[in-house]
Image 1 (cartoon, one colour):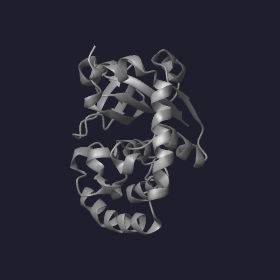
Image 2 (cartoon, helix red, strand yellow):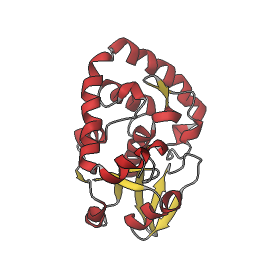
Image 3 (cartoon, helix red, strand yellow):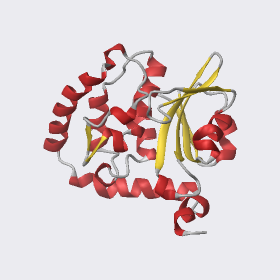
Length: 219
């Protein structure tokens, strides 16, 4: 096994999630209110390019090069925030918070390495809970069946469980009448689904090479 496969194959998921949160914690003091406000002002204008007033799910992360998150763009590291946006859209049936509002909140508390490593999974779970929603999380793929009866799940996974260099992705999975759908799986505008289970959906991503890190339900 080479070094690229060591973390996804040998380091347990709980350790990975805790390390992300540690980096989030040490990163937090360097972000100031002024820079967050400046980013929000820019993002308030840029979001108009994406026509989200209709309140639809965000499926096309690859187009969000014009919106900032820390030192990077939302295209590069915005998947966790988009997953939260989509989960709120599913739960409330509308746009609960605007995307620029969510970005500002996570820049204040949740961003990892100034956005280069996205957002801490623990931070997004805590944030969702702070909005009065019930959450239940698991690190082990074998525990996905415990979320099987949940209508909305936020799922974090390695894009390729054999190679850490293919990075990590987070998505919202929503259950409709005909099964589970993955929103913003590939960032191209394509909705993935339906699937009869969360495990089947996970196994379909990136030709079966994805590997779960963390998942939590939202209700």
